[in-house]
Amino acid sequence: MLSILIPTYNYNVFPLALALNNQAKRAHIDFEIICIDDGSLASCNSENEKINTLENSRFIAAQQNVGLSTNRNNLVEASKYDYLLFIDGDSKIIDENFIKNYINQIDETSEIIYGGRVHPCHVKQEEKVLRWKYGKRIEDKTVPTRQQNVYKTLMFNNTLIKRTSFYKILFDPSIKSYGHEDTLFAYQAFTLNLNVSHINNPVEHDDIDLNTVFINKTEAGLINIFKLYQKNKISSEFVTILSFLMRLKKLKLRTLTKYLFKLTHSMLRKQLTSPSPSLFLFNFYKVGFLCSLNINHKDL
Image 1 (tube, rainbow, N blue to C red):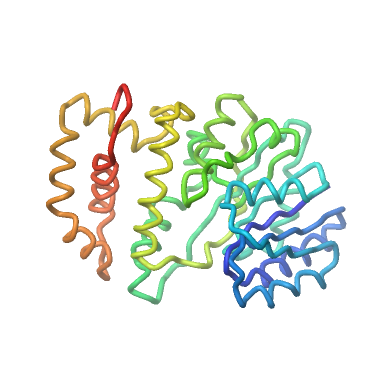
Image 2: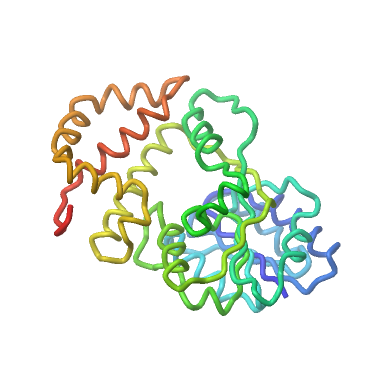
């Protein structure tokens, strides 16, 4: 029936696995829970080992870091059931019927079902405001909003997918660093015209990054999406920021944007790591950073 797959890195996922285990047992379904730590060798893995004491559950501490894409593929290889439920390790279950909600949505047409994600109402640490604000205002989309573009709003932090559908795509193992492995998977689902459903069954993002960490991860993600585009693995029309870059090029504004970004870079970083970061300036930061990459592509 259901394989619940949890990729993680240096994080205590036992509370998450316990909550999922309890719900799966109450749903009276055949299930398994598999969690793989991606080579962090962290001390918290002593807590994660407790997952092995749960019914139909196991924790694997990988000795080598392979990246999120390969880790997710490895989770699928280790699993056995027809439906795969991916849940990021830094998630919190906020609905006591979370598993049942997914089970109730499965039918013959179900290929991919995305439940969504929400962020907490408040964040206590000023050093995390940027990540929290971005998640709250940009990522936390309602079902009607997600349904307006079912592929572009598809993420894999909380997603159920049919095994046969997963094997039509797989996560790209060439993506080793953080960012946009979900975007590529969603694009490939789009090109294959897989059936994607959006439901209101969110998890809560429980581990908000520090502002500086989030900016660094954003930069890594932009490098990833740029390389994927260079290799013709993804269309610029599918990725909003790449589409915007095309418009800048057409208007002959890319060089000016690059210059302004380099001129204001330190001031932007200071503002974005302040207690009141601007999402408008964060968007400019992302565009400027992308314009500053060494571009060697026929239409960039």
